[in-house]
Image (cartoon, rainbow, N blue to C red; front, side, top):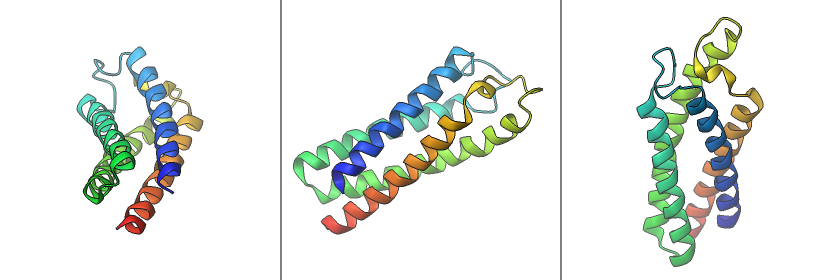
Length: 132
């Protein structure tokens, strides 16, 4: 289960990098019309990267503290992700008229990222509880 969590976390991260790349390439990090605040987007990325590294170290060392730390970070990461999702939805609905840079992010990538993120959270939770 812990390895499955790692795989889903990595695939989720790839989708996140793609969305971040689209957003940055459209100037989202500088555009005042963007509905996604740069600190939230980059905070989400930073916490996700730290959590992933902690999870990898947990797999190497089998330390319960690292597993629980990764899980705690995942909760924060999810909160930031939901914040961005709820700010992105109106942009998607107003796709034709919205000037926001994130209007170019494909729905399938957003949905896939979200589904994989939930799967990652569940797998990390199950692996952490089972390992304790």
